[in-house]
Length: 185
Ligand SMILES: [Zn+2]
Image 1 (cartoon, rainbow, N blue to C red):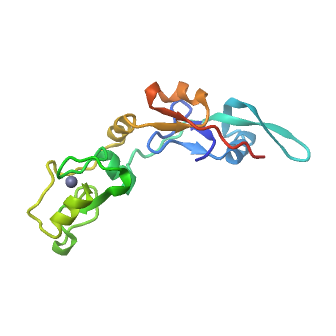
Image 2 (tube, protein in one colour):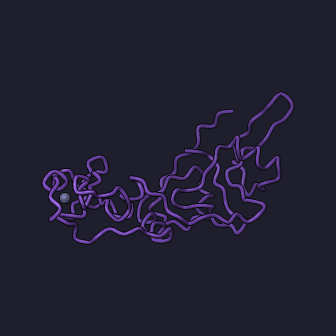
C-alpha cells in the first residue's frame, strides 16, 4: 500500500473504494509540479537527493478539482463487498479466502460474468448449485453505485499509514488499523 493519501480539491479523498493513495515519490513529483499541495508531512520522515532534502508528504490535495466517473469497477473485491462477504445462498460468512464467485445463470446456459449475474457463494453452495439454474440467491444481484459501496466499505477495517488521514476519512474509529510506512529513502 502506498504512503500518501490524495484528496480532491474539496478535501474529500479522490476515492474511498478503493482508497486513493499514491507513492510518496509521485506525491513529491506532483507537489513539485504544483498539481497538488501538501496538506500534511510525516513528522519524522525525510528523503534526500544529493542536492535537496524533502519531507515526505502524508496527505496531498489536488490543486484543481478533479471530476471523475463514479462508475464502480466490476471485480472480485467489489462483488464481495456488495454482498458483504456473505454467501448469497445460505447466508454464511466464511473467511474471505473461502468465498467464491458464482454465476446465477450458469455459464453453460449462457450466463454472463457481470454485476447482475455474479454473486458471492461459499464453496459448499457453489458446489451444490453446479449448473442448476433453478437454484437462485435469496436476493438477485444488482450493480451497486459508488456510494452504496462506500457505505458498505466503512463497515470494515481500513488501513492507514498516518493517523492524520482520519481527519479526512470520517471512518469509525474502532475500525481503523494503523500501519506506519517503512520509511525508505
Ligand atoms: Zn453458502
